[in-house]
Length: 123
Length: 106
Image 1 (cartoon, rainbow over the protein chains, first blue to last red):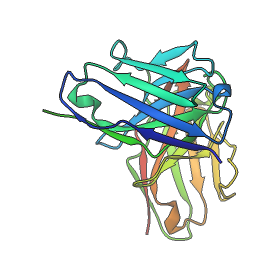
Image 2: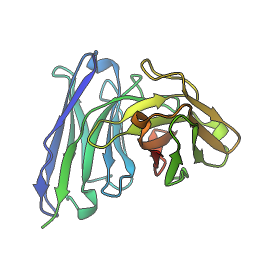
Image 3: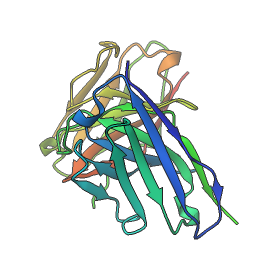
Image 4: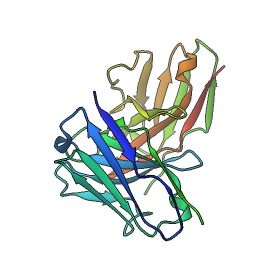
C-alpha cells in the first residue's frame, strides 16, 4: 500500500527558511516522479514543484522559483522541499504527491497524496 | 499560465446526480484529472485521463469532455461524496488546478 508522510511544517517568520520532508513507502520510489502541492487558506490547490524519478529534472511554479528547491534521496525513499525567503502568502498545507510515471508529462496524474504538513509564515 | 474554471459550489439531493464542470478553451485537447479533498484528509484521485477510474472508485463516478468543458458526474449521490473536487491539467510540466467545487449532498 502506498504511503506518503510529510513532516517539517512549522510556524516561521517572514524571510525565514524551512525544510519539508516526505517519507514514501509501498512502491519503488526511484521509479516515479514526485510533486509538492499546497492548499492555501482559501482552499485552492496550487502546484508548487515537481521532480523526475531520477532527480535530474525539476520544475517550479513561478511563485516559488528561486526561493524553493525540490530534491529527493532515492536511497531513503524521501522527498524534500527546501523553502527559503518565506512570505506570508506561502502559508498553506503542503502535500507531497506521487506522479504515476517516472517523468512528468501532460497525460500523467497525481495518483497518491500524503496527509499534508502545515506551514505558517507570520511574525 | 491559464486558468481552469469551476463553480464554487454544487448541491445535489441524496440519490440524485451531480455534475461538476471544469472549463477552459479547447480542454478537449488536454488530459483532465479529478481529485476529491475531504476536510482533514489527503486528496484522492477519482478520475484520470478524462474518463478512467482508479481502483476503489465506484462506477457511479464518471468523467466526460466536450470541446471546452470537462465534467465530473456523480450518480446516486451519497453523503460520503461530499467534499471539494478539483480538476487538473498540465501546462507542459507545470500542473494547473481548477479553483475547486464544494459538493453538498442535501
